[in-house]
Length: 92
Image (cartoon, rainbow, N blue to C red; front, top):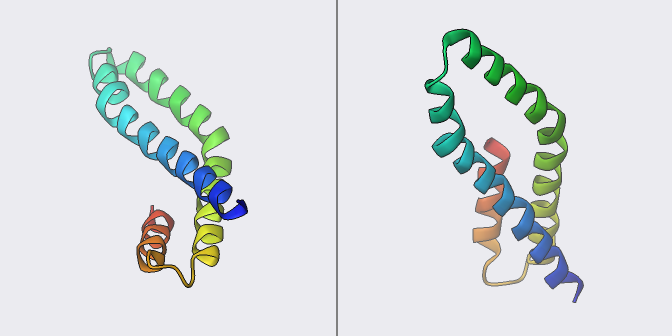
């Protein structure tokens, strides 16, 4: 039960992190391209402030949950995949 809960939490954290990155790349930055240079600069600064406030905790939580899942799944068949995913997230 605990292992399933940890995996679900890990999936939610990593999935929201990936979705956030995709949404920023596909929607936010193209929208900022249409603004005037001062408007774009202001928009980028605001995004940076907001992401700077939430991303360290979010990324740290996602990474910590990856390590916990890897620890729980040491003897499972999917351990190598979990470890590879954890290493990939750590490099971001």
